Each structure stands twice: as structure tokens, then as C-alpha cells.
Image 1 (tube, helix red, strand yellow):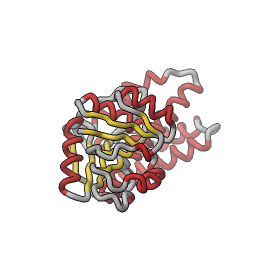
Image 2 (cartoon, rainbow, N blue to C red):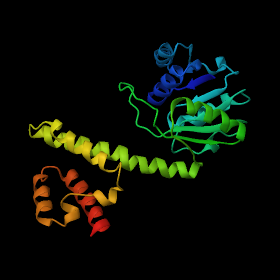
Image 3 (tube, one colour):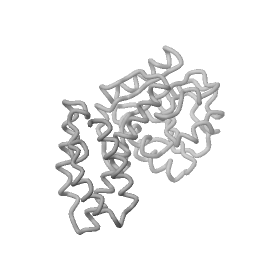
Image 4 (cartoon, one colour):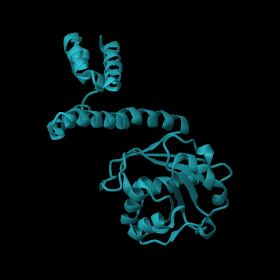
Length: 253
């Protein structure tokens, strides 16, 4: 399969490495920054371009992995191509690819960082296409890198993306806040890591509702008051603590 990547960030890097490793030919990497395109293209043994007039128009698949608000800017340059054009956004509908004959979505539900190697073999690949032929191309590409493949329409994918923000992005921010609290008092964040890991392991065999712990679910008002006093110098964290504790209490009590 001949594949062009439009973008050179975290998603393009991990998908590009996975597809290249599976034996697919990455024919080009495009980025508005030639330096960024060259950095990824070198890893994928592909040419780098920063001018869409030089786009390979005979690839089988064009994967758009750019910021959501940039996708529509690329659409006018991607008309009348031989292959399938698919974006990788969770929150953007397929309709953004207006006027493109063979189009779809190739959304990997995962958190990506360039500096961390990642095995995508169990990463959910969420696919959508405007035709059976386009879906076959996306399925073939997804099958090369993951055993978990789902067909979702744009509305379903938006809900999934929202849920992922709660489960991943917000959780990681809370890890950061915990880290900052410990760091300010000379404590090591390593102490929390086994707790974080066990919390994640629990939901492999249970729904989150059933394994909620902590003072809020117990209705332990005395402990919560003590915690809030410790945050007297951080009213911003007091508000987060109150909001989340109230949500837990409303859910469980």
C-alpha cells in the first residue's frame, strides 16, 4: 500500500512508524514546516514536501494528521486523487472532507507522545468511510497495525472522543496536580505510581462505578474538610477538589 502523510506530529509519527514497519510504502510526508516534514520523513524513509502542488496523486491512502482546525484548509488540495483521503481526528466529522470522492476517518483512540515508543497492536482503530471501497482500504490499513477495529459514525466518534478526554486527558492533568502537591512539599511522585497503576488495573475486570474509593464515596466529611484546609493556599485546587467530590457523592450517595 502506498501512503502519504499530511502532518508530522505525534499521531503521524506513530501511525507512520507502525505502517512503515508493517511493510507499507510511505511515499511522502507533508508539513507546512519543511524541517518537521524532513524529520519524520527520514524515519519513514520517504521524501519530505512542504508544497501541496508536489503531492503524489497516485497513492492508495492519504492520512491527514494535523490539528483539527487545519483539516479544512487542506481539502481544496486533495480533490480528484486516486486513493482514499482520511483524517485522523476524533472530534471532526467526515463531512469536513467536502468534495472528496473517496473519503473516510482513521481515528486511533490512543494518547501519543513522540518521545515514547508505542505498540499499537491493541489500540482501537475507529473507522468511517463514505463507500464500501473506501472502507475496504481503511480496514486493510488498520488491520496491519491493530487487532481492535471499530466502525463508528461521526456522532458516535465525537462521544467517544469526549469520553476519552474525561478518562485520559483530565486524569493526566490530575496526575500533574498530584505531582505538584507532592513536589511542593518535598515528596516523591514515585510513591503514587503503584496506586495509579492499580486503579487502572481494576477497571480491566470491573466498571469504574463499582470500584470507586476515597473519602467522598464514603461520605467522610471530616477528611474532606482536612484536605481542603491543606489547600488554603491553592483556592484553584480547592474548587477542583470540591467539584469532583460533589460529583462522586451525587453519583454514589
